Length: 474
Length: 86
Image (cartoon, rainbow over all chains, first blue to last red; front, side, top):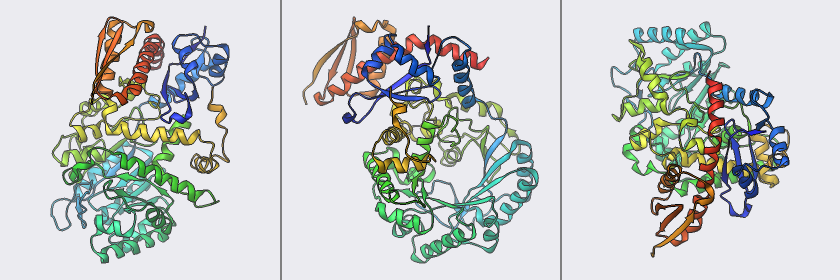
């Protein structure tokens, strides 16, 4: 008697693929078959060739405790293990910012405002908190406001972390409107990455962020300088308005010009001040979906004849990795359980602790207070644990039936921001719709026999050459 | 736009009333513009947009298969998680 570890299924959206159906189990092993297999599976009438295929791939077991059984449990355990220490901490040393972008997703106040920076006492509390709660490979992200308005605090934190932890990494998120010598010195260190925003073309960036030509030119000069100083350790995110999308070629051109080949394409987020000014961003529309696919098509076309400097869309690459690498579980928005507040946490300018940046924005916009304590009172264990109720998608009645459950994640904070509640049926949420679309697209690319597609997919998955899809066919 | 009532026989699925209600609940969320009712072993579906019928028909078929399969594998899944958490 053989037990097949429970499978989920999804028909290919593209009718041209015939009756192809994707099957996957709870640890993310997947394959493609057809209607006859589905009928045999549901009616418990699998053929010996079906069983052989599944057994060889560790997707079934002959008895409890055999090798396949143990391996399956081990994979499940690896993904669900509760983290011991914080591995990612976002610090907000100041809420002040020198720009006022219309859709700024981070809450901010005017540059000259008083009382929105960490005091000496607060900074000392942060040292103590990091010392007690972080692991040796902690990654520290400086957010704002514009954190580089307080380079002195950033430098202090870096020095403390380098002394206290084995391999800390630092990310400075900055609008690059100004770059001081102090910032350049910090950015030159090998353990520092710079993250900024570059909204497609120069024209689009100016319209959405920098407003004046002088500020836009300064930004471009500063970006060039930082790319040089950091030896390329600069990443940028384009935030795009689905109702006013820039030319795809323009975006790729400007990113390539600055030596940035990984682009995380994002529509305007529905958080913080963005929520009030762009109500249309509430629902993802088909326009965005088409633009996204066209963008990837253009990337693949550019990659086809290249041997270096290949481009990628970051989120699609991540989806491909999540589908094909059982151990891939690093991205905070796409993992399950999502241990927010346990391995990932934010310390705000006023010492409040939040499970994520989005949770901070919900508090700032007055929607809901999702803080999980403060530097003064410590972590509120009860509040932190209460957030975990919807963080494990395997327990959700919709996700537990979904073929992408193990590759996907859970984002109740996004649901709260959009719908004011976290129990909306998953298929109705923007999070689910977006990820279903991306995973469907990723599977379509994985199963494509087009050489042009295979070249890019292989590169994104760090495979030496194009791989054989036959292994995924039953 | 004219409405039409379609019928799907659930007899071969062997699902209980409770499980069929679950199927109906899911379909109602996925296709709020249509109405789903159980009558014995038949699901009556009031379709307001005829063009959407092929998709709804397929989805109904799939929900029946999915629910039956999940019912049959519930014990194994429970056993795996019990083993994992203990």
